[in-house]
Image 1 (cartoon, rainbow, N blue to C red):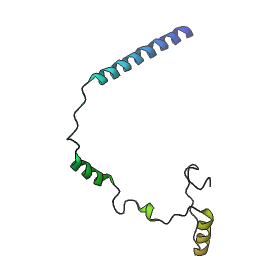
Image 2: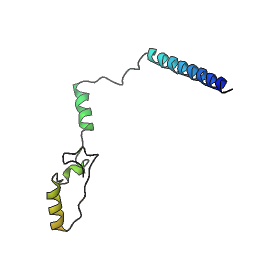
Image 3: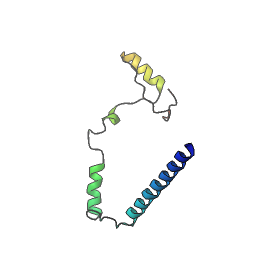
Image 4: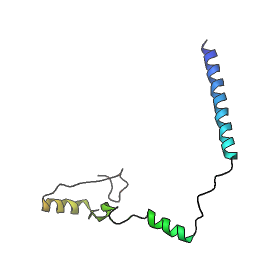
Length: 97
């Protein structure tokens, strides 16, 4: 009984994978859809202006970040403020925090 179920599951898996593959090949044979308009120097410059960060969009770049942990600790202690440490998996230049 168990062998029958395993064989049936294998056949169903094989049939479904063949069906999915044939659908993928049919999609690959379809002609590509044309792009909306052509990319030339004028439209390239216009799109470039649109995707660049505008004034005020990257406010985090205006924050005076410290890369030296000791220097940041001294400034925070002098101003009586807490220290905020941001690290992304040790991939920063200052090592693991």
